[in-house]
Amino acid sequence: MAELSRLPGPVMDLWEWQYEGSCREADPDLFFHPEGERGGTRRRRAEAAKAICATCPVIQQCREHALTVREPYGVWGGLSEDERQDILAGSARRAI
Image (cartoon, rainbow, N blue to C red):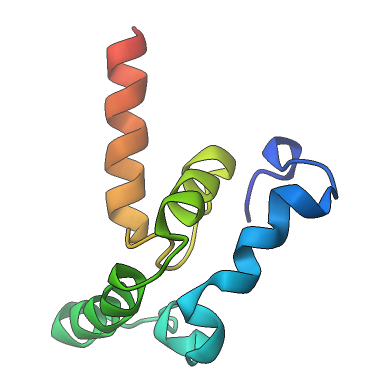
């Protein structure tokens, strides 16, 4: 589950970017893997989601949101769960 204490308040200006997301027209199952999905199947699904993200006008806002609240699941802002963890781990190492 996302770290809710990191979420901004319910101010429309902070969330309005989500209405412009390319993913709103896509199948949400494309962005979140089913339990037990592995290997090539998982990689192909994630790559298809990332292809949608690549054309998205709000990819940067989405990515920043996912990193800020530490979204634990799915493809957000063109980044997989593992890619976000790597970025956050790198940030933590640099802070030490």
